[in-house]
Image 1 (cartoon, rainbow over the protein chains, first blue to last red):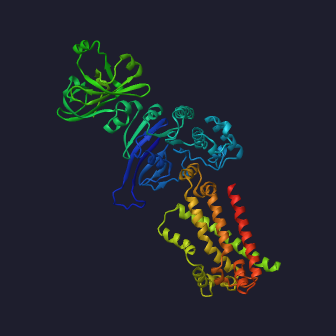
Image 2 (cartoon, rainbow over the protein chains, first blue to last red):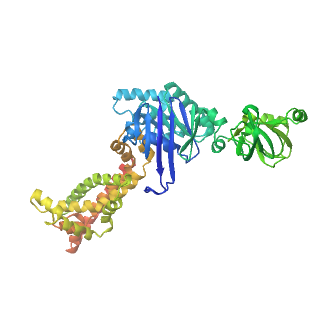
Image 3 (tube, rainbow over the protein chains, first blue to last red):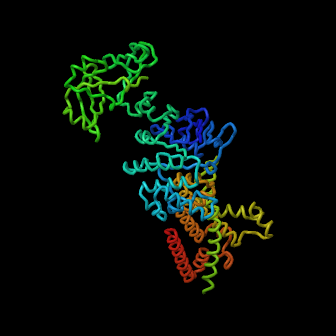
Length: 375
Length: 219
């Protein structure tokens, strides 16, 4: 099963934009997906939903092609554009989009056109069992909770046995507990059925926990594709780094040179020399670098002198300016002694409590070269 | 006395029923197109349908007289087919009622159709239904209240139609003398007793119609 998408579409501020005017938003994206769980990731307005709507046939691209498993859904050159009802797609909307005048069973059976009523009943039963809502079959949508509604929506989308399932932030309006539970259930159902899924989210945690493969959108374009580990630990651009939680980003670094055998690059940043991962740039060039707050290591003050003697590499002294408790960890803002830049450091609450440090204290941190990214 | 009341009453109900029947079908169609489709000249179509709502009924009536007269386009076609003129018949009164009540149906139904959640309709399309099926099974059932309200308003407007009817159908007792026309005729000739009776019957009928249909809409 393969999904190939390569489309362009321009949007205009006014309803009837004229050709030649500057579009208010232009999308030009190309990506493919396979039978796994693909996540379209990006912030609001990055074009994720538009891309998904184009695959479903709810919007028509200006140009390009969409192929699902070899059959052409859209091709501007061959003038092919299958209407949504001819595409074998399951779709879940952000707001469930259930039919309010039909009960759960009728909602699920709506997509089973052409089947005999015995078969419809059988298929609907299977779906009710699959998502675990057998007892709700005669309830109406306005009698259901948010989580139950999305389960019905999932059952309805899967009932006609679609070739591919598209989900547009289906859990974004649910509370955390229900959301986490539904994510797990959806992942299990997807694995069980082996159906390819394209899932939209702007939530990094959701993307990371669900994706086999991530496709990152920005400004209507695909910025990077890869495994969640790739995206989260090796983002290729500053925008992406910020999106996936590199809250320590510095843009004024200058390359001083490279280590032997291209194993590292020496930067001048934060008023000192830093050993960073190797980047293929020449000395004197400006680069940006970053590190995740949770990857910064707090060095114990007790044996600080020994550590300093042994290896001064990437050690920073600073003063704790503020501490924010995130529940399971604390985020400290550290003002660095040498440059007065601020470094965010995340420390697990157990560690933080055992260190007995507080705002105003001085402390030392170490940045591991392998945790840093440079671009 | 019974005959004097029943004759205009039945005629009025017949004209209103026929008019509302056609208004319902054409009105829903026009409302759907205006609410859902983008096409050039849409404002013109909208304006033409709405016009009878704003024009004085005598103006609508006058235009209809021209269209339905012997030399008018519609009158000509009718004469070709039936061999008779259409003016001063109950059919002409029904056409007048149709024209003046159509905008009420279109406006009410279009706003109801326009408020149906688009993603619900899109869900139906993705579930394998074409646009007609989606309109019949999803959009219209969800816009039901607006459509029924449009029917009630159109029916009431048709029952109460006076000016345009007078111009295209005259006030021929037993033939085109509808309730409003008969009330006016009775009042003109000083038969206040009959006028009062007709007014009471008309008010009662209108009240019952609205009460019955609004209960229907609640279901």
